[in-house]
View 1 (tube, rainbow, N blue to C red):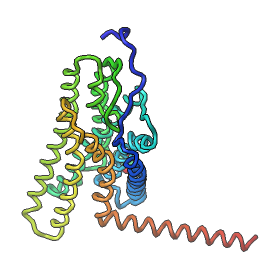
View 2: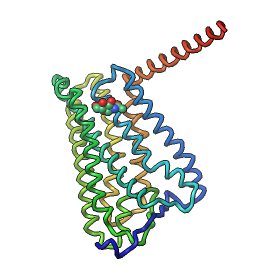
View 3: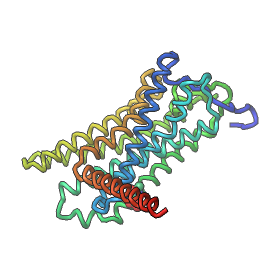
View 4: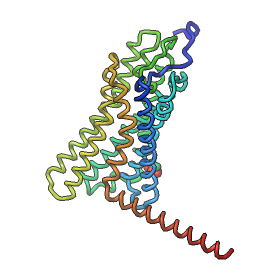
Length: 323
Ligand SMILES: *[C@@H]1O[C@H](CO)[C@@H](O)[C@H](O)[C@H]1NC(C)=O
């Protein structure tokens, strides 16, 4: 590929989620609301976990890391999408587009690995309870968290390495609300068969491996739980069902989008919304608000907040009296 033979496109045009103005106004309001809910819900989890020493266990530390990833995952494209609902044409610079591709793969890859780590943590806790403390110490937990970031970044770099050097010489219409690699790669002025296969292998390996690891660990846990019939096990079962819902909602769209790179279905962009908006919003609900420990920690936090505010007002009143 001779870089001198063509002038690279400076920007891409995004077609967005819909072309109808009414729908776009509706989406503008809806996604504004969803985005705020994602940020607030996940921040609440992070604050709760950090401020409550009882929650400084591998499971909750990974959970709050997942919340951070969720906020990132919801932020690499959604605010721009929300902005774009009211703007026409929807333009993104070449660099912005590559940045979106890079960030999406870092965050999505990281989230996949972290979900696997969390499933592994539950597997050890439920299937090997006596060895839990030695297997899942804080050091191993840090290793898993750092590992998921490292794997996400490596996966993304490998993906970008062959994308950024493709000759983008003219076609620049992306039929989505963000720069989706599966669509962008098709715009290169070259035979994109090999890059598409590479991309499929790269993302496919990542997605399918984590998906099956998750399925296997959840199945082993479910089988273990089935043998018992105590109340605790019933609770574990309902938690697991919720986890599996998240996994399917997150991975289903990814696998569908990446398994069909050679034929672009119009549902792809709707499915992407599931991975980048609905999973980040569901995680706090599913992992936390149904969880007694987290709920009581949040309650404590609220009480502490209210009492500190009372104290503050009390001292203000005293100050006023003194003056
Ligand atoms: C994420 O994980 C690391 C390593 O275990 C931990 O030190 C950190 O506090 C976690 N971050 C959050 C926001 O919980």
